[in-house]
Image (cartoon, rainbow, N blue to C red; front, side, top):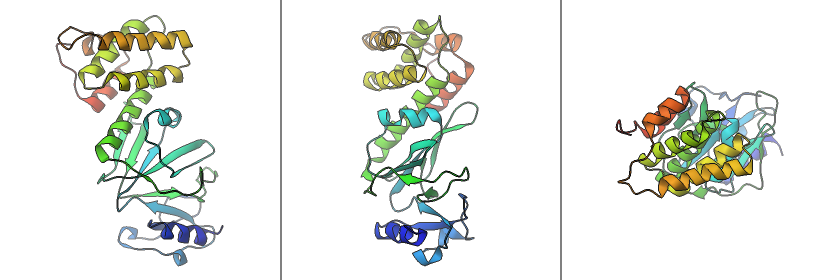
Length: 260
């Protein structure tokens, strides 16, 4: 299918399109934000962008961790695409999020974004790496997801990715996990959410099944305590974890109580 036919298909789907420079994410027209494009604005070899406007938002999986963990956390949607080295790394939803929200690690690398009021390179564009973008299946209508629910899911995904990146070294994982779970429990993470987070993070670090079960037992142990019972939390986590983990979780969830 030619680029003009792709452009017309997207327009027929009710989406706004943007012409991009060949093998680039860069828009080819100055002042594009105030312009409306048709299929006739595309030339052979152009890339094409889809605009995240009119309630359309893109979840952009930027890191290997979020690409692999996404299905555990993100709502299903039929509008999914990617490229060979980052399959299913773009998920499109109908939601009311007014501006882009980026989740980053302590080293400033972006893990995942909810992109709104922007444009994203779409199939059949050629990525600057030379890889061709493709839809996972037939073009579908994006799932409608309440904005707070989508933001929560993406935040949990970012949390799992951060923990996976800064996983505790051998020999200290029991206490580390208790402190980690206590810290996130204090920040309002539920037991079910914590199970998903630790399952994803421990699998990323290729812990054997028995050790992964230990992590889930530590989650259950922490949540079995009443809110009035003391739990290991942020103070102990700072003693056991890498500074990057503590810094990143603080940015995501706020400062833990000093009495923890």
